[in-house]
Length: 351
Image (cartoon, rainbow, N blue to C red; front, side, top):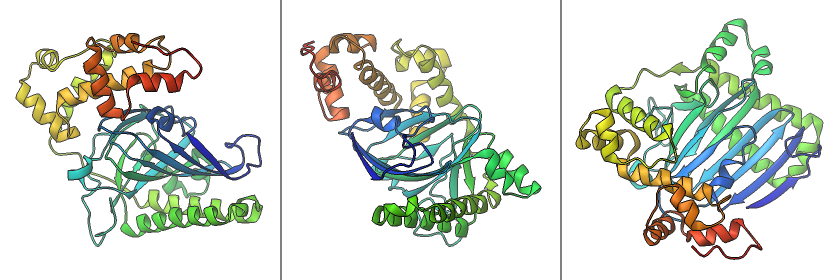
C-alpha cells in the first residue's frame, strides 16, 4: 500500500479537521479498510491481480472521496448511525466486459432517462447509510465518487419538509433516481475539487477556502437528496429472492463449504433455476460465486494462519495444488507469496 499525504493534516490524524490523502493498494483487503468507520469487507469476484486507489479529503467532518478498483468485487459495509453517505459512479464500464453493477438488489445504473446520454449511470445515485448496512456488486474498472456528512448537521441546513425527505432516504441503503442536472453538477464538483486540491493542496489549510468547499459539498448533496425520487421495485423479484436465500445459507456458517447441490436441495429448486437466477442477479454462476467466496475467506485467513495449508483447509480446499492454481488465477500471486508478504521476517510457510 502506498500512501501520499497531499497536505499535512492539521490534526495528528488524517481523520482530524482537514487532510487530503492519496492511497494506492495492491491488496483487496487493504482497499476495503481504507474508508474509516465503514466496517467494509471486499471479496474479489474476477480473476487477476488487484489494483485500487482512493483520493480523500476531510473538511471538518465532511468527507469526500473517489475510489477506483480494477476487479469485480462484492462489497459489504455499514456506516455509523449518525453519518449519511451517498455515491455515484464517475466511470461505469460496459457490463459485457466488466460485469454488472448491483447495489442493494438494484441494477438500474445504466437505465438512463432524459438527456443523460454519455454520463455513466446518469439518473441514479446510491445512499450507503441506514440500518442493515449496504451491499454492492461492482464491475471491474469502477470509479466511484462518495460524500459523507454528519446527518444532524446536514438536516439543520434543510427545511422541515426537506428534513423529512432526507430522513426517509437515509433509513435504508438503496439506489435512487435524481434529476440529471443535480447529478452532473455533483460529478463536476467532485472532479473539480480533487483536481484543485491535487494541484494546490495548501488551499485546504486556509479556513475560508475550506469553509467554502465544505459548504459547496453540503449544498450539492442537499440538491441531489431533495430532488431524489425512490426507484420503483425491481421486476423479477423471484430470482433476487432465490439468490438472497442461497447467500444466507452460505453466510450461516461461512467456514462450512457449501456446494451447488446442497443449495438446490435446501432451497428445493433445480440447478438450472438456481443457475439462471445467479446469472441474472450477479452475472455469475453459483459455483463461481461459491469458489470466489471461499477463496476470499482463505485469503483473509492467511493473515493469522501459521501456514498456507491450514488457511486452505479452514476454507475447504483439500487439494493444495488446485487451491494454489485457483488462488493465483484469482489474485495474480501464489498463496505462499501472499503469506510471506503478510508475515515479513518469518520463516517460509511451505505448505
